[in-house]
Length: 462
Ligand code: PFF
Ligand code: NA
Image (cartoon, rainbow, N blue to C red; front, side, top):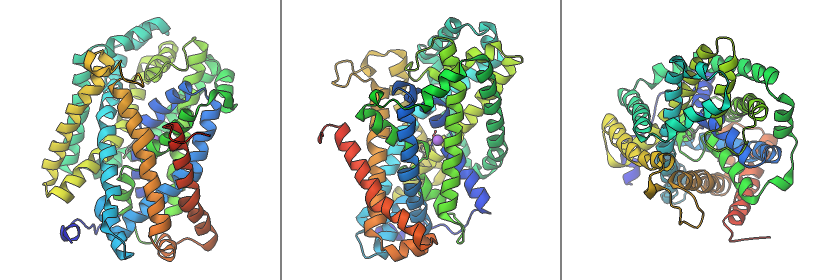
């Protein structure tokens, strides 16, 4: 029983349900909402993708989040140990702990590109404050040139990504995450208000009608099976699922807290921010002839156009990118926490050593993403069958493979391996609500994930 012998169980709890919801929402809301969702929606033709994404959040994301929080709360331990503990309690093999290990790997890979994009946001704080955005005065070409200059300069990319990972390691190693959560408490409502202002400005000055019809009138001829897989994978990515982090948070959940209600609140908050980001970006995209399929640069070439024509645009741009940075930073902290906790739990590392070691490994891997954008030959993989560069491969492996597979295993574990009455009692659900949850984790989620997944990778085709 090596797993059990390490003392990794947790005894402290969130001070309230609200504190937990804020922390989990802080980990959920990040680059996935503001940077990734808008551009992958654009690559996949808009409305139909959005609809599938929303269905995935509702029928798969929320139940899987509940399952993960339940495992964390039941195991009262770090992910791999929590899963092993629940498996043993149910008379099953502790090897189910591999679910926790897989999540850690996914989180590690995600963080390696997450810090690069977070670095762009930091760079834009300085560009905004230094007057570059205002100087472009809303000229789309000039804004595009600013972005190209940043992403083609490896020195800058390395500098900003390094800053982000060092900051993450320092905060984690010092264990001041709690203090940071207090800051986030203030920043989340502020981000919401600012996004509302930007959205209204974009609606008034941009092409709001085109944006709304792009996002909300589904045209299924534009949606490929790979697009469906991306919508599914993004539902996991945006809610921070399959990466162990919701189990970590669940481990601190107060005994009486409602897993169902809190999960729904977190999912709503996350979805609202993503849709608001889309509604802020697309009016500007359409009014300025930017291609919705512009890719990872979309956020950085659209909103700065609006900032350049706004009264006080330089200030608003600075504040906006500070908020994007903070939102990304809280997610990065959660991601690094997952990797470090694993080293502490499995390898007996001291907490701060674990943070430095995993941070260094993340930094090294981030060079692959940097090289992908800066055009380094070895990271382009032009000859590869998929024609993807290192960053795109990493994104594909995590969002489209590891996260959905993790969700599949979690659903199967909680739906079929753990005894139903235990789950029902542990979650404090009434019969009807439990039936719905149970249907999802036993059937809807595993079947949908398997079908989409096998189709997209071409093993099974209708
Ligand atoms: N949910 C975050 C986002 O949408 O940006 C990304 C993320 C954070 C994924 C933390 C996984 C995680 F553990
Ligand atoms: Na998110």
